[in-house]
Image 1 (cartoon, rainbow, N blue to C red):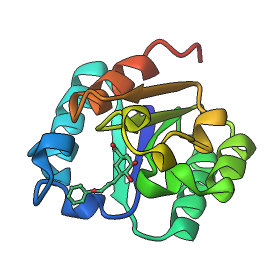
Image 2: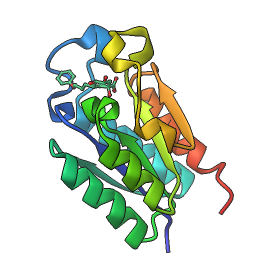
Image 3: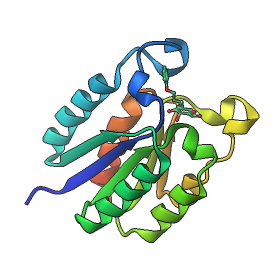
Length: 146
Ligand code: CA2
């Protein structure tokens, strides 16, 4: 069966492409999903691409990725990056490696964006490459020994 990568997106990313293009680019989340689907097909991977504005739903999806035997989770937790110990604990509790992605580089922005909790459990963090960062994360999945 084709290896599946969960790609999870946090709060407000459903509105991507509507404002602040100088920070986040002009792609919508649907555009990013389509680009991920194309790259995954090239790499022989399947993707399960989701977005939620709710912390607990994202925790549940990390658990689901584990239960479903996903080969990896790519996650942009958006603002929960900087607040959520629940997402950190979930990332530590599951087998699939977690790759953290950010469109912008939070460390070059306001001080409150400098800390990433989930980053403490991520095997890799890709930031500041816009939508391309999601494709870089998919490429990184193929480097994982499994
Ligand atoms: O750079 C990233 O990918 C972030 O995860 C995006 C989050 C921000 O809180 C993180 O510090 C860095 C914000 C997502 C907001 O999404 C948008 C909604 C509407 C228009 C533009 C972006």
